Length: 221
Ligand SMILES: O=C(CO)[C@@H](O)[C@H](O)COP(=O)(O)O
Ligand SMILES: [Co+2]
Image 1: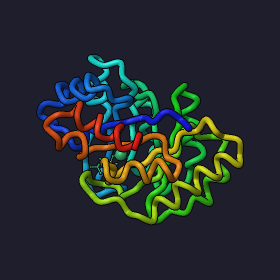
Image 2 (image 1 turned 90 degrees about the vertical axis):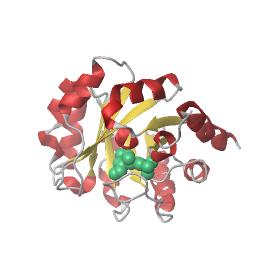
Image 3 (image 1 turned 120 degrees about the vertical axis):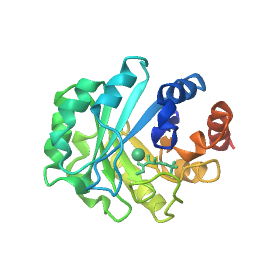
């Protein structure tokens, strides 16, 4: 089984203290920093753009996992690469040119992720298996932190892991995002996920080290 990756989503952090918030979760032992980019079109919320990623990159060497919830993400790939993203995840539903978007990310020397909304079938993934380093199975509808995990998405996690295994792509990460906390993380792991995004479960807790440890402890149970 792959080593679990804990990726706090800064969407639930205090944006007025963003640098300190990121510093705190890195010191608390998180693995990646998950950055939610929303454009107000693909999802009904507006968040972070390349200047913020660039500003954080001046201070941190951690892995920046950039989740692009934007229409036509291919327009933004170069800007986020230049800003310091290590990996970029695009939504299957956000562009008719998803294969090209994944190719562009890899041509920039970055890891490429493909995200599937709760209502999206993983069937199309079968044509993209060679082009991904990560599959993000959204466990909530994208747009906001603090929602409850949609239970039917766990079967999709298992299906995606099976498709990857059948294709011999054991190296590909399966990420879950939304509603992950100590009470749900183990189910997601048992379904086949190895990367766990957690926003409110980390940033709503006063002690972030304890919050991250609670997630890791639930995985060990
Ligand atoms: O991409 C998204 C939401 O669209 C996520 O990354 C959320 O920010 C996760 O928040 P929690 O559900 O963990 O509070
Ligand atoms: Co996200």
